[in-house]
Image (cartoon, rainbow, N blue to C red; front, top):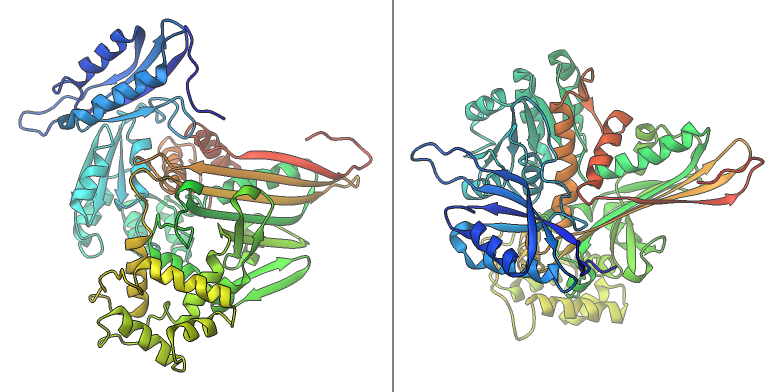
Length: 572
């Protein structure tokens, strides 16, 4: 459907301006544009904070409802003119957002509450912006962004009405981190998962609740009893995957069980990808998170249940086990890889006597096969010394010699492609596109310490998003159910979210928004009575979180197919 605003008297849009709006004159000039275009306007929200003498200027926030006065008024054109002003007046450091378009916030202040609360956000990377944008809309939320990268932390903190930053060595400056945790009402950790146990220990000492978007680890499970004794919540797996996958799936599962049904099969897949127009390289992939993380995920062992049979896939064969994904979005031509150990979700979701239990990762078709060729060539190797490697030719010679020493790079790649000539040539063209071979080679990263470091650096440099390019998140569940009267149903749920150009990626939004909403539930006391290590699989967590996600443009589309009608009729 078109996202353009219809022309006509009485039509309106809502826009959010955030920046130094008053002292730069930006707001007055925006109002002049509205007057010149014969638009009326209403201030839905105007927030200007008091500034102490000598304090740096604080950004203001204004939400305007703009209404057309006649059929010839083009509100999209008006928005464009205001956007041009925002871009032109650089001292304002301003941003413009449409609040009435899908995928952007739909109300000026999500967070409500009477008491001031302090939120400590650890990490200022790709996901942090959505957390601060969400929780920082409230005057009752003080947001502290702590990070090793002080400039990045300052930039992210500026998104909040009451934001400040703390540049620090999070891993090693325990006393300062401890003080920050003690002074906070909740900690949201977006650090690497290996750092969460140390943060959790500080939270237990300080009796401060903790939220993460990472998988629950054995180290975190060992802290469950201590967290319960401290009376705090440690909520994990509340991002995208894991997170939204749990919540959306558990909602459907519980609805089936509430009607007396039994789940017979469960399949859930998810992927972060370039939007179709941005999938313009031989990989059809770009990185919205660490290339090393993607490479690592490509080597995980996997186990799942399929039509009554347990299937085990070793990490070195995972990429060779991709299969076409045909259950949704056929025009995208996707494929699916098994994702880790699906069988552990029998306990997580309470499945009994289930026939199929599968979790997978989505990519565009052809990605896995080509990456498997590169894996076989040795580009994922993290152990072989590369001290004497100073060029791409040196690296390819090293890999070739370590696998038998073929007479040419073409023969080497053909062997690694299992004599599939077309695939070998596709991989060769890809290496040439990356700048590893051919006439347009890129500089070799001599500071890298392993083959995989070299490969990841190249991927990060060459497969990054342009400023105007969008990413995309796709998630899909298929759940089979049987009922006592003989009815057999298939339940489907799909989520597709696109990033907004140059402002917030789909990955950032779908990981950070659920984490921020869950943290706010805890701050508002909606999970009082719960303590210890939690997952977002209870109705008390998933129901309000999914409802709040809808208001942020994260919406699952569900439908039911009755495959066999039982003795009683039911319309889903």
